[in-house]
Length: 412
Ligand SMILES: Cc1cc2nc3c(=O)[nH]c(=O)nc-3n(C[C@H](O)[C@H](O)[C@H](O)COP(=O)(O)OP(=O)(O)OC[C@H]3O[C@@H](n4cnc5c(N)ncnc54)[C@H](O)[C@@H]3O)c2cc1C
Image (cartoon, rainbow, N blue to C red; front, side, top):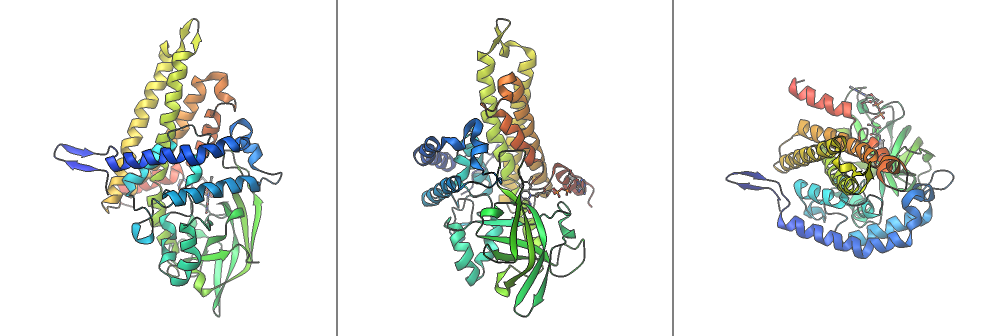
């Protein structure tokens, strides 16, 4: 199904009836299956939630990991967990336009909840599809991922190379029927808890070549993979990222994902498409924040008048509204272009860039409108501001998005 209708008088990107129904089912699922857990485990939410989720080493505590697993299992049973995966692989088959509209809806609520946990943002992405094309990998890794039984991490970024991934230092050499991987990765989301990691390593070619980089499955119990120090973040993703060391790490040939030497080319195709999720999430979050600001502006009085009467405050509200609407239609247009099998790379970059900036800007304005209360952890705006900052870095930094847009303009 595709949510865009091509009427004679133009294109319409409003959510289709099917998406609206899906969103209703999602709300019901959250009400019945997730909200009771929010009440039961309230220590992981609210002003002390980030602190309570981790131990002294910065590692997520077992109780929180169990809550996360329970929610993902329930989400799988209800059909939300793999909604973005193609039907032929056992997924829900939502188009990019539909999926992003669901994502916007999912995030248009108080961020201080467990609703985000219904999706495993790493595993259930097109990135894992190459594993489905190999019988051994399908049975041992892909099917358990789809069933929320196994979870993975993606090891691409290194201490010395991030945006310049083609300059990767991690390398793998063939030794009989095995590969031997040596190198280090950092900022790797979910690595401390993953059942396995797909680690990218150079197997041929030179610095700067996109070809010659391969991806390997490394199981958590492989003695050659050591999860290093947890990297405590600025935002709310506490306990998630870590260093990883690969030393004489041996894996069988059957653990090469996809075609040898083609992994980075493959990864770039899904990273580009996956970028569309961010602006949709940003719009949902910002819509919720602006609604809180409107209520507060009507309610909060200074000098005997609601602050919403003041033109400076109205200016914030007007800018937020205009910018949210701009990014909403930009991401929907980009998603629709992917669904039409076009390669709207610069458009995806534009949507990701503006989505990340929007999230940051609206969170900052929400803190400002709420004054001192906005700065305190009892309201979720300061944590939104901290979390939004990462969105301007992961999935390609602001500068890398601008580079893509400019290079397209200049035909470089
Ligand atoms: C919360 C979070 C989760 C992450 N999860 C993962 C994960 O699961 N797996 C993984 O592999 N990585 C992950 N990352 C890493 C992320 O992908 C990298 O941080 C990102 O690609 C940028 O790389 P870098 O940090 O090395 O910065 P660098 O590439 O060193 O960039 C530093 C600065 O230079 C700028 N710059 C670099 N090159 C250019 C250029 N050519 N033109 C203009 N400006 C340039 C950048 O925009 C940036 O401002 C995560 C990061 C964060 C913050």
